[in-house]
Image 1 (cartoon, one colour):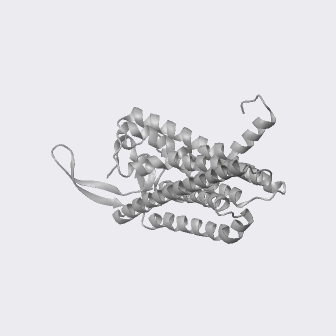
Image 2 (tube, helix red, strand yellow):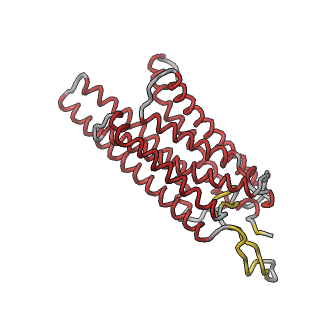
Image 3 (tube, rainbow, N blue to C red):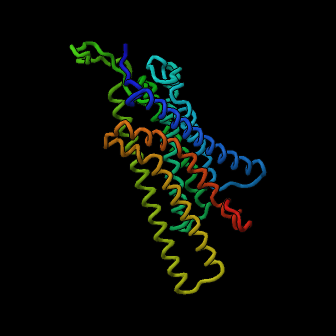
Length: 321
């Protein structure tokens, strides 16, 4: 019989249950947040309003986040083979492979689209591009590259049967079977049952490298935009600009704030994943790890609707919303 980590890599059944509940709650909130963003953009299209590249990037990001949030975080062990013995495990090998695919395709895809938001804002604020210019020169190739890249990566483990149960859900991993046990019932010789070791290592390296690149790029873009707007502020105060120049500065400050919050959501959601790749995490740390990662769609929803909330607050003084 294949060997699985007891209690989905947690200390006991109680911890496993708590983490499963918090993870599913976070997944539900994230999926709901993504649905709100998708419905808002689709509503604009139905009403005949034009969408800009920023909104189309958010549409693609939210779709991918919904896939990852619903099929991985919210579904959790429902899609994990019941042979694992983990709490609420109801799935089989096929559902496990599907969950692993959705995790890689949706998770890495939304990370790349977060960098696309940073790129869009960087070009608008620092380099003075218009959204029409971005749509004409960058947007279509960007969508093709991102979707083709993540689809290609997500398919590879499928071909080598490398989506397997690991710590509560199905990811690129290997399954081993104990062939020889010692006198203390420990395993001295294990045989690989399913998956490929090289694919497992390759997916870990690609995932961590992609996340590091995304975090670095988004951080650089955020700092670059901040310094650029700060220089605008100094010039505006020095030369007492009025009219369109002052209005452009206000708009730049508003967009800078939006970029900061999007970058912060990326750090909150995927920062722990990168950290865990280098530092072992005690059992208690899984509460944080398994709760923060699925919440990205929820944070993005708050940032996406922030301008509408601020406008409503301005038009209705005295309200907290």
